[in-house]
Image 1 (spheres, rainbow, N blue to C red):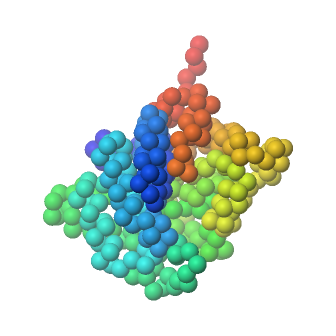
Image 2: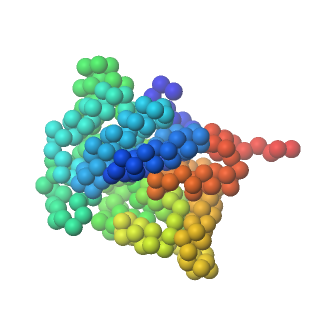
Image 3: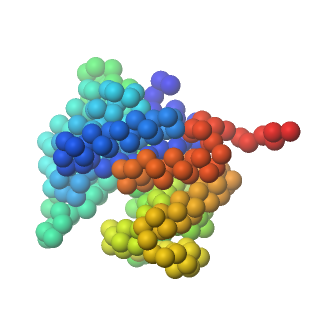
Length: 310
């Protein structure tokens, strides 16, 4: 594999993690990543805290995963509360360390702190993508850097701050036109939302891989947090009925979540999605169960065209 962008020549399977805030938490997470390495993911991504609050932790985890496992690693990068020199230093550092992809996001403001996105040097992900491409050209001339595969976010259920779905698609197209190579979607629980989103992207002239974001629910409290963090998220009635049939315990909800995410994944594969991005919540258990229930050992087998065993 000569460059990250070549991963998209076949179906990709990827996992997302967030950097822990303690050394013990970092080691526990790394142990989970080592377990998931057996599933042979196409890449893993590492999130970036609101307002850049986990900037150094993100970089540390990205470099450790790449150095100790060899897995393709994609750091998130956001605009909020970052100067041009901040972004330049981060992007140049990744280029010099051989990181071949960045997920470029506008990002969330710090919690419980007023923020005006217009005050940021880059007020949206499209501007950030364009600046990353500028640095990429500079690094290519300086040291032969092969460039980044740049990802951006997509929202099958709609972006909460953009109620006009036509305008929302225009914003997404602007990110692609600025130089983005692929889209990773926000989590969703009804695959019809993804298929509709994919059709609208095609009609808008967006011709890049769309990676579907899947997250197994883990608990009632977790569902509430997800709803707060991803405004506009929709839990389909059949999923809610499954939850209501349980005794409400975390273990029962977790089993429902694994079952639902497994069926989502099977259906997405049947509809030939470009890839599936599993939001792991820094745990290996649910993702490994999904693979096991689908009857596969790793991502290579999961992405292969099925043949009859007789």
